[in-house]
Amino acid sequence: MTQSTLPPTAAAFDAEFGFAGWLGVQYAPHQSLFRLWAPTAQRVSLCVYASAAPAAGLVQTWPMTPGAHGVWCVTLMGDQRDLVYTYQLQFETTQTETIDPYATAATRNGARGVVLAPEDQVPKRWGARLPAFGSATDAVIVEVNIRDLSSQPSSGIAHAGQYLGLTEVGTHTLAGTPTGLDYLARSGATHVQLMPFFDFGSVDEAAPRATYNWGYDPVNWNVPEGSYATDPATPKARVQEAKAMIQALHDRGLRVIMDVVYNHVFDPATSPLARCVPGYFFRQWPDGQLADGTGVGNDFASERVMARKYIVDSITYWAQTYQLDGFRFDLMGILDVATMQAVRQALDEVAPGALVLGEGWDMNTPLAPAQKATQGNAAQLPSVAFFNDQLRDAIKGNNFDAAAPGFVAGNQAAAAAVAFGLLGGGPPYVAPTQVVQYAEAHDNLTLVDKLAASSPTDTPAMRVRRVKLANSLVALSQGVPFFQLGQAFLRSKGGNANSYNAPDAVNGVDWPLAATNADAVAYLRGLLALRRKEPALRQTSYAAIAAASQVLHAADGVVVVAVGPLILAFNAQATAVEQSIPAGDYRVLVEDGAIVVGRDRHSAGTVTLAPVAALVLKRLA
Image 1 (cartoon, rainbow, N blue to C red):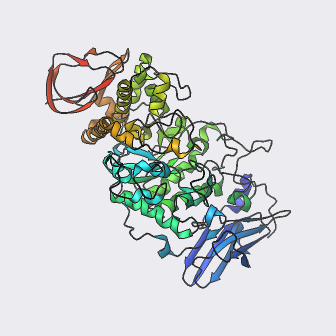
Image 2: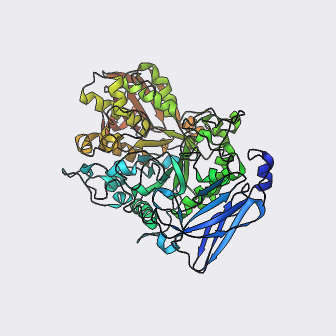
Image 3: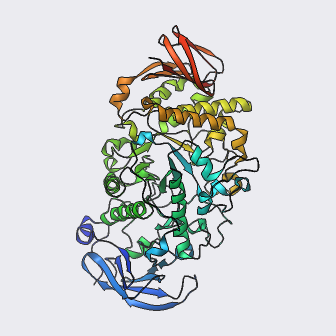
């Protein structure tokens, strides 16, 4: 096969070489089949190494046979379990060697692929997939970093910073406060969103605790990250332990969302995809420069046939093989609408009810505006949810100006935006199921650090009140509520607004805070229980919200809305406020930072709102 003369960016190239079949390895005890898509290569060989040790020597090479659509194939007879392999590709003027882009197991630091037998890929306990989840608005998502959860000794977790840390039960601080899996199971969350745990390139797996990184640096998209495994040098360990973590969460009724990063790679020069088909997988500007809308040096060309196929194949693999319940797409706005539509369609077939959510920010990449999977194109992705930065900023203030106050810090002008967001917003979204409501995530300042910057003279008690008020707004909003682990108990990162590579001392969860702020933890748990109990808070259409809701007040630091039988009132003023509401008999459910049980009250048309607090009333029949 001669090297194609078609430029890899041309539509004609996709038309000639686009391939719809499987790629990677198909293992059976009697033979293993290998397929690689490399249409511009002149020769391709399968290289077999002596062991999984990084310095293991080359044992043999097998020439691969070119076929239709640029696919190279070879079959090795016999049982090839634990085979360690790479591909060597000869181009017109260069030669490369790379791990299989479709590898599902790898040696330490992801340099070589490994063939695992099916029985070596499952932990001791591995059950069936959980039943399909209901409406997205029934979900409550908590974001967790695997390492952060257990990196601090206060967690009481033996497998610190590892997958197995999330399998341990009965863990607690020295004072007896539940931590880890037990805390999550009691939190009121339905879904745990795990920050990247595919194989990433920013932590040395030979010394996994020597450096820190969130992991938004993809190397091998279909291989679990080794730094979270007990033994990164044993390829099956990371696979089994990642599944054991997922199973442990499922056993406690918690579904698992994987944070995925298909918008860029760690290093476009050494990426396995780039080494197989140079020039194809990354967007370029007309002058030949790599596009950099992601801000990290490259943008993945998802609109190209085989790049789109790669993303869909990868998502399908994780959903099926790891029984995942959803995917959060980092910088989703860099990807194209058609790719996200294909992802959604594939998941509907293999994992019904799986959530798909992402960051729909509009970034500068060479796609037409109508092609981008951004908030503005939400109508083209009706079953995909978007992070709602409008409500986020209305609640706590501009995300990129630490000192700018939001509603909960006394910005009275934000009341209208809060009311709009509280009822699920509206266009460009087509339904509240598309709206992820949040005040804090791993990015930027935590809520309490933002409040420390925007309200620096607060007393500790007032800061707690502001956090409770913010959490009330998220928990009671129409849409999909989202919280970072520790948000309930005032988790701080010491004012670090971009802690992606900060040490464990900054990122690790300070579990004793959960006891210090136990009241705030119980309060959020109570709000989420109320959300589960009241269907009016979980509407699935804007028509239903419009029919059942009314904004009664949205000014002067006070927001009051009627939602079905509920009155939701939020006072961000530092003093109590008298507020008009419809006259009638009510049951008080939430008042002055506390969950209330069974207190009835008649209102002649006014109610007193405590300072910096929420009030929830339910009309009695």
